Length: 135
Image: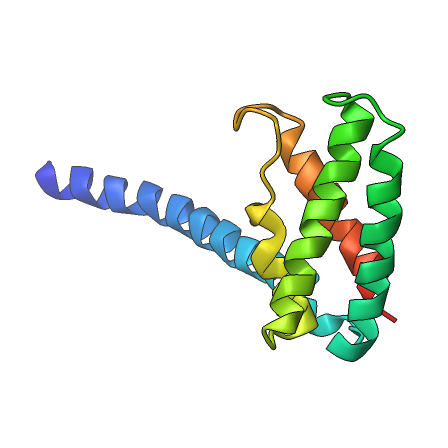
């Protein structure tokens, strides 16, 4: 009787392991297809620095016309801070994609960490920088 019980448990466990293994394989495969910084045609640091400098000046000019603490003000301030961090990294000899991806979470957003909009803000900053610094 014990022998039959053990065989039954192993037989029912096998399909569950196969499903779990398949899901694990599919998850790894999906992650491998996500866009990475190496897949993009990045501008060189020499090309990127004047672009960033122009954006920083433009954004700085916009701040004076906005109400401090308003969402528009925070958005402009976040972009300006991010571009300054990227520019500083480029001055230190960091490659453009590394400067972008290494500094994205260095921007202090005036939101709580559990705010559902915080990931959206970081995604917006990252996408804007990618649009700006790729060919």
